[in-house]
Amino acid sequence: MGKVVGLRFVTFATAVAVAAFIVAVAPGSSGRVPDWAAPQIATVVSHGLMGASSTHTFRPNAVLTRQTLSDLAFELQQQLASPPPPPPPPTTTGETTTSDDPGTTTVDTTTDTTTTTTTTTTTPTTTATPPPVQNGSSPVTMAGLDTKLVNSLGLLHAAKEFNQGARAAGAGIPTRFGTEAVARLLGLRINHPTSQDFLELRPQDTATRAETAYSAAQILGFGWLDDSWQIAWAKSAADSFTLPQLNVWQRRILTVAFSKIGMPYIWGGTSDGPEAPFGVLSRGGYDCSGFVWRVYKLQSYPGEGRLASTIEGRTTYTMSVEVPPSERIPFAKLQPADVIFFGARGPRSTGAEIDHTAIYIGNGWFIQSSDEGVALAQLSGWYKREFAWGRRPLKEAGLEP
Image (cartoon, rainbow, N blue to C red; front, side, top):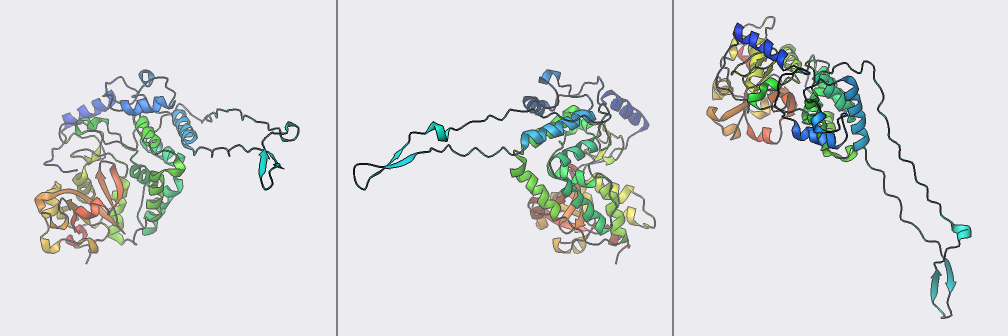
């Protein structure tokens, strides 16, 4: 999970090749891209979404337009709204009479049509039409796709809670922070196999219809929105998101970390821009240790002193064993901006068993690059069981007592 065994730097020739490749497989181009979203496209088409009559006419590599996205959000809301309650059972109007047998009562079920005639009214079926949007043919970015879908799920307030929690602690955040946090918690993005990292799109890249179909199929799997445990869980997570007040250096570190939210997972990736760390061309992104490397090693901070040299190794393993056991930080003493490590045996793990790393942000939350790309997560469940130890680069660099 995010572990790498080395690092290669992109040469000028490779950079030129990356640029040429990105043009070749840009959304709407004729470049051949594996039909990775075929099951999700079939699901979307079967629900009559995104204006395609069949999977053959879907155009998976075409750009997502504002009108198509608006239509999709509207139609998802229509299809996943809770069904109306069933009508009450019919009632029978009768007249009670007394039989010849004393003490026996019978019910006359003959309906007097002159007084009890029932009229059944059939409500005409109406098909709601999605409203037109301005500049409907304009393309939509991946961040725009996530924002629209999160809003359509009724989770705008949850997104705002994530924004408010980070800002209240003093951290700077990008405008997409809250909606990306929610979208990633819901699993609305796919992590492409390493060999297909060239398919990974950054938040600022134009969304494709295939990526949109994947997200839509995920949402269709939630069931009725009012009863969805996924929606309820996202709301609960957002309600609990608070961070402690950050000091100056914690704020600087987490502001950089938060600026990467929504970036894709790229094996060996350390950059926002094009690179090919293991021979697979990509637009940019991070693996787990590459994300920590980017925040602590590659970022320049005013007055940082020895900060950039505190982390020396590029891999998760080497980062984890650079501090002696006596300086390793247990779960109960974690502070914002600590680098945290995970292993198969939790605190009893050896360095060789450490296979994942992230950055702690406080109050049981951390930020990482994993299957969901750069995203927020709670230090609970599997993560808490396999938490091994942390290290505090800010203290190692003499920037904190």
